[in-house]
Length: 280
Image (cartoon, rainbow, N blue to C red; front, side, top):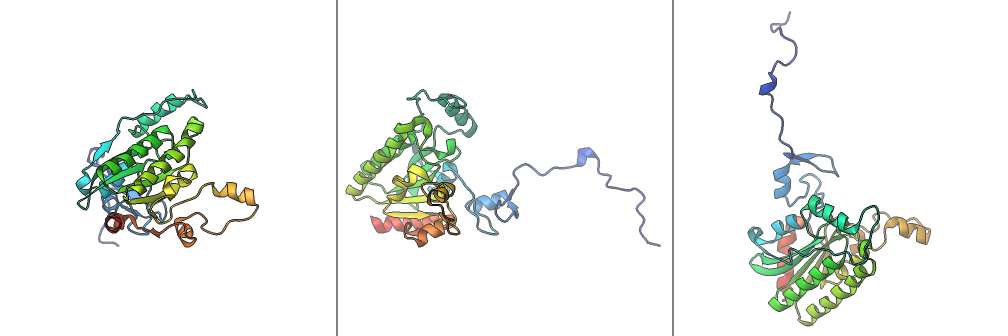
């Protein structure tokens, strides 16, 4: 006979004594499915401590990673989209923009700012995929153009962080015009002999890839980022052939000469500082 006998079956903890783990305390990596503390994930630059998967993040996280002590001055913070075409699909374009603004807290798909990065003032434009798929409309093009103007006026390096599904269909030709406008502004930046680094993150596609994302003095990317113009399905159906393994991933794009190098997000700030120092 066992020396220990449980008289009451089951756990008898009163309901008022039970504690639930706070929401958001743990982060589960979508790649390796392992869990880690949310704070640990954040301190690791939003990359998995187990498999180094780079979580998709937006401008708020990038600014906190890159700017010293998260200190920066935002440019054109209140610029919002108009409705030049009176566009309506399942809902009106102004209604979609307003709903997205309320959901994300953003005014459009890009934020621009300047501030110190390892004690060097840098002008940064960073796209947010959560705002209508990071689509490039008139506001995105105008804010990037104005950020480049600021870089020229203040003689600071310019960093573009791209994450986008391409041009914004709700603005049709107006969105495509931003490709030419931003490219022309980057030509002026080059004439001013100021450095431009383009960081491509997951995903960077469509008209963004076909314009400012690929025009950097250095074009760099995060590991595993999807980079391309048309999607794999469209290309496969167009050429009638199966695509190579890893097609359009950053490593494949690097191997075929369209990138200068791939940078781990944890090393991004130091690598950028070194680049800008070299290009000055």
